[in-house]
Length: 385
Image 1: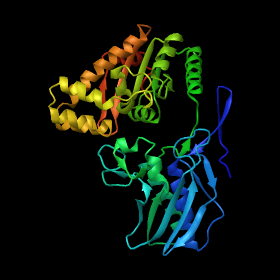
Image 2: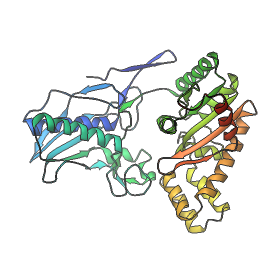
Image 3: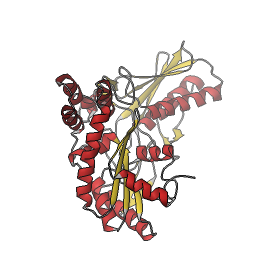
Image 4: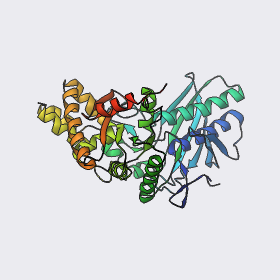
C-alpha cells in the first residue's frame, strides 16, 4: 500500500514519502504487537509529527528466540535518495531493565565524533525517531497491560553499503546509515520547482503590501524565531531552503525594503565564503571557514587541525570555545557574511543576518541587523504580543 499524500509545486503533483525514523517506529510497533499479543498485525500505522497518517505492511516477520523481528520498507515518494527502498527492521524483546531501551543493530551507524544529534558511542538514531519509537511501543504496553521492560533494536540489513554513498563517513558516523527525520515525512520538490515556489511566495507577500520579510532555510530557523518571540507579528516568514542567493535576488525584484535572514550556523556559515546555495552538493567549506578565521584570530596549529577534522559546526564551536576564540571567530565570520550578502543585495534593501546553534544559542548578528530590527520595532511589527 503506497503512501498517498501529495504536494503540488509549479503545476506538478509530487508524492511524499516517509523517513527512516518513521520506518523504524512502524517496525517497532509491529514487532511489539507480536511480542505482546502473540499475533502479527496485517499492517501498522502511526501519525507522524507532521500530523499525517502512515499505514504500511510489514515485511520479513519472524521470531528469533525471545525477539519479535519485522521490517518496513523506506518509501521516499518522488524524492528518491540513497535510503529509498531500504528495509528498516526492529527487533523487540523482553528486558530486565525497566522502561523502553532503544539501540542500533547492524546497518545503523555509530557516532564517533562529538557535535551530532546523539553523543559519541551511541547509535545514530536521532532524537525525534527515538521519541516516535518510544511512543509507539509505550502505547502498546498500555493497551496490553504490560509493565515490564522492553529492548528495541533497529537494524538496516543493507545499511553499511548504503552509508558509503552518503556523507555519514565524513561526519563521523561509521558502520551504517542514520535513522533520521523531524517531521516523519519526506516532501519532494525538484530544484526548479522549489525556486519557482520561493519566487511565488515572495511575489504574493509583496502583493499583500509587505515591505519587510524574514527568510529562513527551514524548520530550525522557524523554531528559533518562535522561541525568541520573533516573527509573530505582521512580518511574514518565508522558508528559502538552500536557495539563499535566489531568495535575496527575489526580495530585491519584488521591492522589499528590509530583509532578515535567520538560520542555523551549519548552513549559513557558508555565506562567509560567498556560497549562496547552501546544499552540500554545491559547496561546503564550513570547517575550512572556521579554520581560516580562527588562524587570523591567533589559533595554533593543533586548534586549526581539530577544526578541519570537526564533524559538525557545533563541534567546531566547541573547539573554539575551549580555545577561548569562539566570540572573536564568530565576529569575523559575521563581518564576512555581511560583505558577501551586501554584495549580492547591491543596495536594493537593508539586510541583516542572524546565526544560531542548538548548543550555543544565538551566535552572532551582521552589523546591518540592528538597523533592520530597529525599524521593525518602531513599526511594532516584529515582536509577538
